[in-house]
Length: 221
Image (spheres, rainbow, N blue to C red):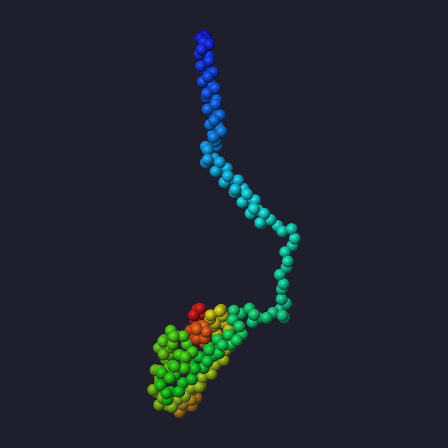
């Protein structure tokens, strides 16, 4: 049989038990099994703040209690197409005039004068970069001497057919260009459609690219 504790041993045992219980109570009051002290309180605050944020978000997405106001619509016959363009009507006309003027200058050649004079008329309507490559891209000078001997003169004409694309700083027009050449042998006509890209430079419209319509530059200038 176990030996019973003496009265002194019983007092010592109960005293130690009281100390342990007091220490355990202090441990629980400081955070205990929740991760301890400030970390547990901070985690609790973050969870509470997240819950409040979720509640706010749910309130924003909540259905309205009254129906939204319908947007106004325009009848087809009342639509003002020009108001949809990023440029005013006058600006579009100015851009078209540059494209048309360039195409006409391209087909106008007086072979009794110098090639430089021919290119100058186009360079005045072109961007600086395009003007530099203009003479190199044209095949007119290869026959210049021969055409000069025939006293040939070509008259160029042009007419804008369509506006292919447009933004605030550039536009692409399809232009029908005609060049009628007269020399000692009679008349010859060159006729074709060209895509003319114009860009706004310093408040003026300048030609950025001039190509046959099926290969014209569609870039932004």
